[in-house]
Length: 432
Image 1 (spheres, rainbow, N blue to C red):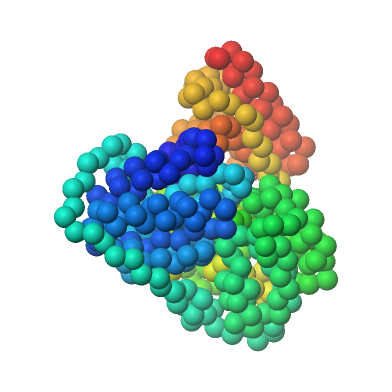
Image 2: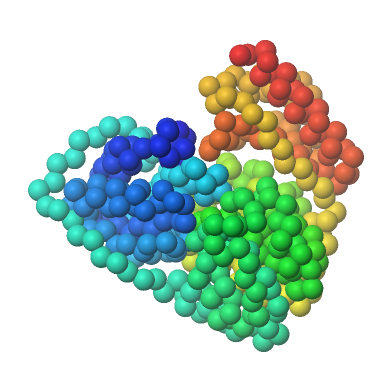
């Protein structure tokens, strides 16, 4: 089981059980000052049981529960701004047999200070029992007010991936003026896995080959990957397009995760904006956004664009609408052409989480001798030159270590990744 600010995740029925759901939701109750909490789930089969159990734990502690049923994560975040707290039953892009919970306070994910209060046992005594009520959300209408109507009516394909984007992403895009084809609506018989960043998206590539763009969502619809002219784009392109739209709207202050493409940072600076870097993870990006009053930004590795005035989370559905509104605009091609100058590779290697810190420490010793500039904000990032870098960091959600590299030279990038993966694997052999 993984317990981080990104959420609690595990394989349902093995290392994550209903007893755990009761415990963590009981503890979370102590953080809910409003005595109200919205709750929603993605399409995983175990979601119903977990949602009902979570609701019972909250009501036992005097919390009134507002049930959204099956909805995208961004919808729960949006409603949590109104009600004061929220829980999403989801493990995002993890395999179907996994599930988990994301905890929301005042519209944002929990932070490092709040996490221990959820995962460490607490005894809460309440004399009153909370109530439960089914509610709906104005989420789609709220986005339409931001984007307005798209006059050129772009032709798009939406790959639901069997997830919670169904009934939300297609409806939004139709509402703002797009012509929409939908694939993979149901989880049963879906042609791809839950994570569009790692899947080949072959069906979407085929379906969108004669359309203007294709959008692929993960199971809870906070991640978004785009397909353009029959080619799946790296997740950073999603963020880059969101950033380009933000700049068009006049926003200047951005926060990007430390593993986001340097091309996006350089583009922002060339357009007169400023960039600060955060740890990887949307909660970390949001935390720095709040501290610096940033206007937009996100996490390149997850295809996650964040617009804090609307939602304190990665919002794939909002982003699909913003991107659609740019189709046919020269600024759409400008950011794509700019990002194509750089080549990025992201890999991962299996490393037992018990050895993560020792492996990182060993690699750090090697990096310190090789690279003149080392950043240990999140894992270890070595700057090779102004256009090349490498980052290794432990995953918050899986038993893996992630290795990312970028360069304006493709062969150089491949060599950086190859050498660093070998170093991580050698270090793992030495410490276990």
